[in-house]
Image (cartoon, rainbow, N blue to C red):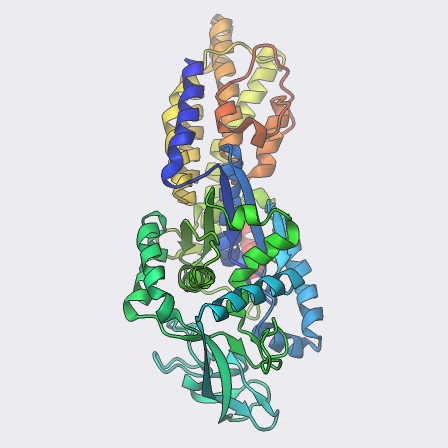
Length: 566
């Protein structure tokens, strides 16, 4: 029966081809603006989601390249540098380290970590632009743009604020209105104000370069029609809205000093708009880290999964594919675009300035392990609508599920094996693995569809299966009258603990590696993988107890955290 299970999962891997084209899987997380400290919503919307998916693909036998980095150009960085009295380079160097430390503390398993301000990204951005230019997809237009007379400077997007012309919300930026989500041009704002000097800007003529999206739209629509069945519902909906409205030429240059320079004569005083070089940054970061980058970005034997919040969808479903299609060089286009809605904080928006919510650098200071944060964030991942981070819910899910279900099962089995069988694994009949088989199939299917929250719920269901089995068998009682029966129960539970370590690995990697150490596994979780977990545990193996996996969070601690984070 065990041989059948192993064979079954090998076949299952092969048959996942609907979502995964080849053995190699390329995973990207949306690149956050470097000048902001990411909050929990930012982290679960892209970085942690991409990490869990990459970890799952590795344990399922795929060759994975996980690309992560920071978006370091644009008015946001230049304006923030002015506020902090730093050069743009000094600013992005400072905040890149903050981002890296946060990602490392949250155990992000990136293969390539990089920055859009690298020379590699500048070179590939300029190369792609030249191809678009040579292929007739770049146009030039003279436009009137807001200009600050006191500062003698054209004002790009975030150097201007005003009233949104669509929803009439105040405080709309020159590039986008946060209230309604519309992308804007600074000249569209009602009652604009310069953020450089507080003056009312005037309109002045200047010239800019545009990408001719209407010319690329037929090829883009054809590709989207073939790909959208594998995308998240949010990504499909947002993209369809854009295409239905009809694409317009979009400006790709800005009057800034900080950014990738335009490689054309007469354009030396302008740079590319950050949304042009930022998505290209995935390729630039790969080049920065890997000499074999073309094997990932110019190969059809690769499946590309991209993770982001819904506000980033148009840049990944319209802009980035259009750039790559326009080069006619055969770059890899996204196969599965996985977007999320928003995670809010206790019915409020995260705000560092107002001390509302937990940010990445705060989580470490709470003393709560990163595994615990990861677990809860995946449990409330906004896959089908906005969700809330709530402290009471955090405590409940950690104590009742992570501690009470998963942690409790492993701790009980290891403790009873130590007490009754001197920490030596008895012989199993693989009964629990057989019962878990269909649930693991469902777990894998959910992951291949990037339904990560649902995959975690399925992992909890498998753990509950173990607790129910243990409670029904009651080996602590049976050992008095039927030692061999109790031994069989413990052996089967130890095997399920091994399987749980593999399937929880995308969510709580440190605890799962600890379980492998307890169980005396010689190979890594990735090398054993899902199929290897069904090989069970041989009789006579020494099991080494190493303490509990997780600790409960007390009421007093929750009260303190609520007061601290608003």
